[in-house]
Length: 74
View 1 (cartoon, helix red, strand yellow):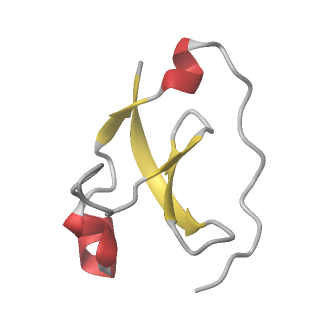
View 2 (tube, rainbow, N blue to C red):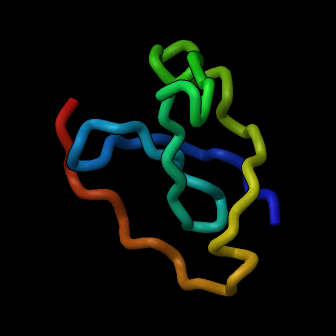
View 3 (tube, rainbow, N blue to C red):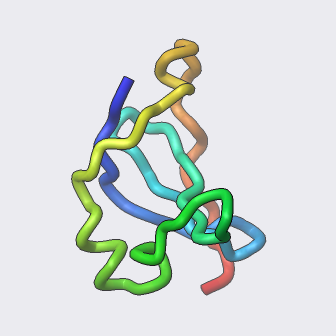
């Protein structure tokens, strides 16, 4: 099921995580060759992808919402 990005936070390792409208979180790293997402490296790029729908496997599996993000390193 696809869900739109509604925000972002960083995890404990400093990687960017998309917050989806369904309440699930999904990493949006830019670490080629696995995922080429250069837009995630800048504030403007991340903002430009708000509303972008990502496939949410947690929704597909019927998982509960993720816990709210904790404060992570900038």
